[in-house]
Length: 216
Image 1 (tube, helix red, strand yellow):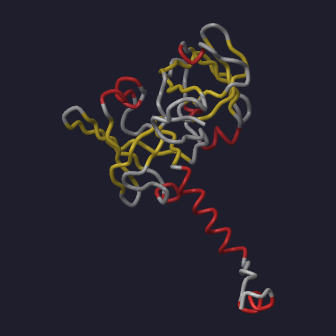
Image 2 (cartoon, one colour):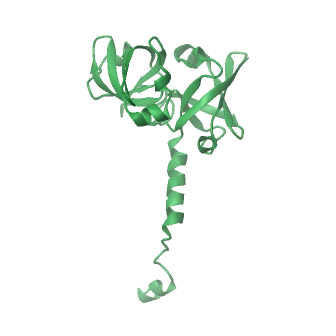
Image 3 (cartoon, one colour):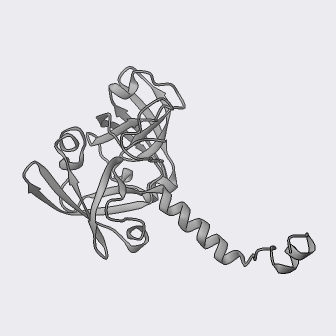
């Protein structure tokens, strides 16, 4: 689990492509301070497992499903990436609960400055928009943000100065793709409701049951 509070911006040092997968080597500093093989590091919002590391880099494997669902395949040598280590149980949850399991991608359609804030508009599909609500949480390339408003196929967030300075979001341009993870709570609620509706199970508690067991 992660919080969506980016610890540092790393740099892609190398990428080796397989038939449907990739091996990425990322240059970093802060996230390597206590790293161990097998640790999880959220990279542009994607939970990836450290396969190996040096004093200045770590290497991860990107599976085919991750390639299909995220923008990692678009990274090139020198690309900046948002990085966050996994949440410790004793840490403050300053952002929101982020699993690092990407729901899909969106496309940046606009930036607009307003005083110290920058409005960011992202377009995505209806499968994701259904989980995105005003004043709810969204992780964009792993960055925890509050949704301001939504439309039929897009939503807006407002970037504060710290977010603009310490993440890669302002390094992107209109037309760039971003990884999106919707708030996990809504997805679980929908799953519970859908499963119950399709199961056809009915409660075994009825008037006969109550009478037979001495409640009536």
